[in-house]
Figure 1 (tube, rainbow, N blue to C red):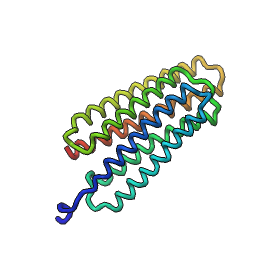
Figure 2: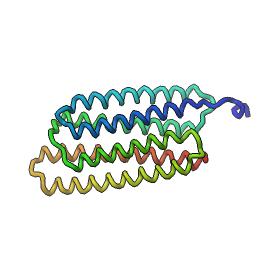
Figure 3: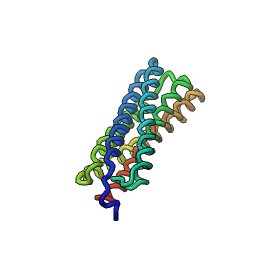
Figure 4: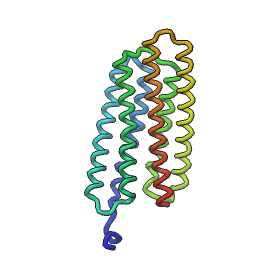
Length: 208
């Protein structure tokens, strides 16, 4: 009964927004990386910077969760949302590091397209998360979540086609394995964006 009269901590939404913006920044930098491999080290450093900032926000969010008596959303939903968004940036860092560690000096148009889809997914994640503070935005959030689902399906098709071409036409086994790893990691970023979309859908359906 007492909880009904306690103020709710609204800072969670600002933390979500900050994290989602970093996802967009990281995705944009990843897109630049695959289009500018000679400067991969600089782009990798920029992605790592975004990932570290996002990590701090994740820890701050979880710390706030432990300190807050009344939360604006279910505690489990808050935890799942921030940690899943954090996974997105972790995967971006993985892609950048694989490109550098494997000495990938050339990528395919399919890899560039997957990186572009990653940017589009993250942009929509950011817009949807920005609307989460007000359940009057429920329809918009659900619409954006559907767009993310469609983009993930596009990425899945691009990856399957790219790997098929790779195994049919690439005679250099090392290059084949390098590109396969890059394709799969890029597609997994869109999977994580879809996971965020599913979490947002769950939040809306429970709270709207």
